[in-house]
Length: 128
Image (cartoon, rainbow, N blue to C red; front, side, top):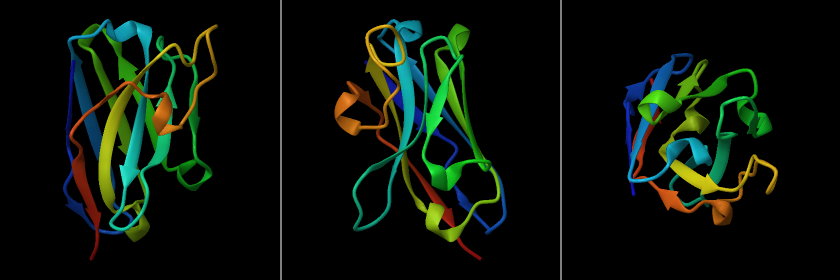
């Protein structure tokens, strides 16, 4: 299984950015997918996640109204649209795959322990 993130760059406060994650080696439409981030000196935290068929999402309060997650099952991809970026959004962003959550087997979750596969991450820096 391979998850490859892209799109991380240096952006000014208030700017926008779109991250992508392409998956291979797994039955993509059977996995919930999530975006996580880790800032220097902090623990990895969940940002947003989406169920296997793209009908439900779940996210943390700090990104509500600014970040949006979506997926394209035909192309084994997920996206994170980020608007009104703030310096505190600076982090390495990871995508991850979770089997069984967001289905009849269990609710959507942002707990890293519930995710089975991880990408290598892409750096997002918000600074003037």
